[in-house]
Image (cartoon, rainbow, N blue to C red; front, side, top):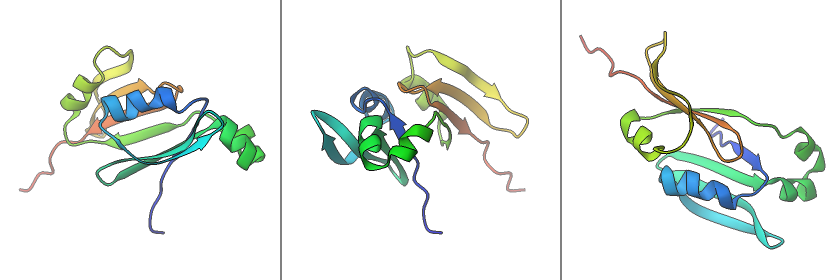
Length: 128
């Protein structure tokens, strides 16, 4: 295997762009129109890539997949959780700044389509 890129199936891509690009700093690398709206986009933030596809576009391209498309949970490891928390200011959070039994500090939010996005920062590795 070389790479794994999630494709989130959403009702409409346009509301997602404010969240992923506006708040979280992703860049739109490619877009494909579908009807009078966006049908597909590729977003990137550093080495992280994410694809969004509208349900209408999936229905046309692969109806069986559209029927099975559901919400997902993305676990995103970050270097600076506080900067992510600042970018999420004003959004309702599922939880904020909790520390887990496995040592990460986490904040969780729903994207505009209802997907669960968990941002996690792990402490620096002990070099002793």
